Length: 464
Image 1 (tube, helix red, strand yellow):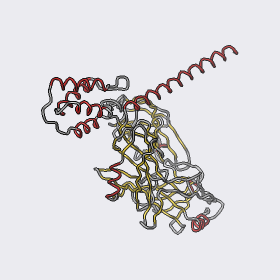
Image 2 (cartoon, one colour; image 1 turned 120 degrees about the vertical axis):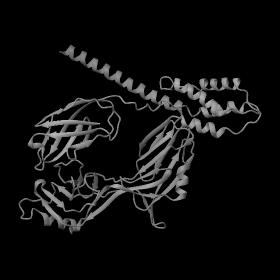
Image 3 (cartoon, helix red, strand yellow; image 1 turned 90 degrees about the vertical axis):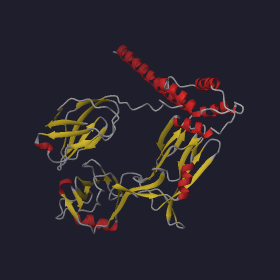
Image 4 (cartoon, helix red, strand yellow; image 1 turned 180 degrees about the horizontal axis):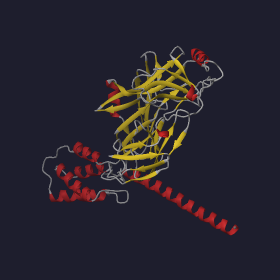
């Protein structure tokens, strides 16, 4: 879907009024036509509510936008430091067909209930596919929701009715795996992310999805006079000539699973553990560069700094990054000791408003800047567009595939404080109770705020 805008001076208008649907990703495209001179040179950014997207050739593709009304405007940072912003025009993103997370799922603990019923029939067997069809038909007509959850009693009633109408045969095969797989398809899936994951509604089941991401942490804001080391993930093991990260799954009953993963290099924030097509891989995107002043550097008068000429790798510029002496910014700024990792189509590294820039010197401080780098190397970490995939060892694959969560709670940690993501099978009762508890707390807070506002209003009126 394409939306077209016109911009003149600080005015903006949409050529054709359209109301896009929310929740689509990399589908809605915005095109801009700039009619006045001040918008012709500089880095332009589109602002949609709290979202900011860089324009490339006056065009951008939107990330996933939730339902709502959003103000849209454009800003530009010109090469002389001038900043210009337009007014805004509102766009309504309509509700999409994206399903609610709880809809069309069945409680996983029902599995044990069904087995009890089946095993209770002496010497018999059930037509499992027929039972599935009956229950599926009920679910289609009565999809479970938070307000109207499906009950075990109702499902068991359907099973009992079928049993009474279809007496079991003499032979009784093992139907456990069939029903287990079917119940698994209809279970509620919880998901969360963070550096430590505390699941308060987990069920005894295999992990559905899991990711571990690297880190590029710093304590404070770096500067040439205050270089800060960059911490990455992985403990070096000289026996393996590799780095290790330990992951643990534990619960309140002191159950524990542990896996030690081996990686050929430390993990930075753009590297991660992923599962693709049934196999586990390290997805390496990060590149690290070290500059000692011997590279070709030029004075960048416009932004009172210096630029490294053609020093960045292909597919590794106009990206975010981490540096030990400067603060990389994705959107160009004038901030002291900031850094741009390339611009549109240019593989230059820019050190902006730099400490060593001195307009009173003939070379504007370039020699001092390069001498500083020779003694204090500049280290940059950023990422490439195309990742390198490295398949994990067979033993690590098997352990990762065997990971399970515990009932009623699971804690997932790692020894490098890496961010993680997990998707897991949730126990429906705890899942719904947690959701309802959160809703009650939020409602109570809203009521309390409303009461305080009324009290304040009445107090001001009495004092007035």
